[in-house]
Length: 478
Image 1 (cartoon, helix red, strand yellow):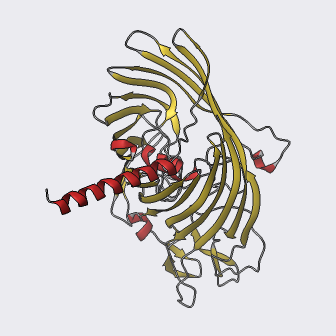
Image 2 (cartoon, rainbow, N blue to C red):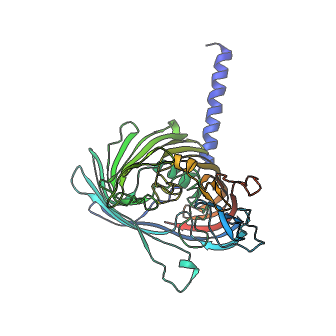
Image 3 (cartoon, rainbow, N blue to C red):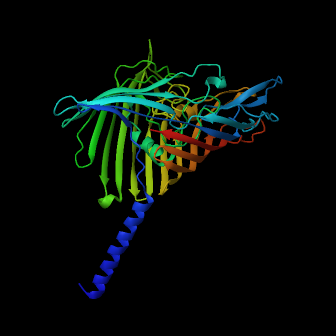
């Protein structure tokens, strides 16, 4: 090597060393694992949990209202109606305009709320069952900060969120009980780790209680918790496959999909590889869900006259999720997406008007999510964007009914949700591994498909709703 080349190589090594030193200085150890209460004969009794609260201010548009006009007899009649998918809350009054679905008053409310993760108490036992097998048992309870129905005299019920037993050995792991589901688990992890672990995000139920949504419902499907049995393969060079069967989901609603035969099947394949010298790591994941649903009691398939499609007695709920995480020192980036039918908006396979049309046909839904976090000593800075898109079925696009203003004409009766988009940003000050102060913001937008016109032939605007949220609070964990 020439003297010039050797000098360049030395400079590169020095630069790499400086960068590594910066990363080490900027990224302190934050882990605050569970607390071991006792340890005897290799068996541990441990606990983990958290407690805290947030002040949350929501301001924005009320949920769009039905559009009405006057018929020949002078009576108000509904011309189109926005379906669910927006953000319900009490609103301030304002002058009523029957021809403007966006004239629904303003949401303007301050709440004292739970965070994205509620107050939690967990308790577990683990130890060697045999020389080659480890046994773990864990239960977890959540308690909301908010009063039920905003009535402080009502009891605040405890939610038994998790409870499972797990066997681990060289052959892998077997978990049975109420556990985190697998579909959309990787995307939910991104939201927790890079954004709302110590924050709030979007409130979800603005008027009532609950843990909040964080980014869920805006490009992220929460994986949720369910009764299930999961087998996980051994970790081979960073690659691991989890496969599970879970209690089947009923899709109640217009389709009457209340009968099930077989469990809900889910799986997630994960690859994780740390970089040398602790610079960071890369994680890639893919997951999926599959389940059949059936109509209750007697059912006969028929061909719909408007669409020409067969209206079935059973349908398939199916979806796929994908994404990954990249950590380079203080910079953390997560990307995720999902696609499928009958998936819902907030949580995977939830009952929702967005998941099926008025004939019960399952709608296709897709979501995309990007989240960035930068860690500077004790401070976490984060910002993210996500969007979920709902696609119309043939029934949505072709079904019409008589126009009450003119019996010779027809109109589309419903505005179907087209998309929801959410933007988050915030800062967390980690005063210690167990004390965290959060200030975060969220912009939520819902947009519906536009339908119909006024009696003068002027198209109605597409219903739209925008809500701004600001949150601040404190969490203590152990």
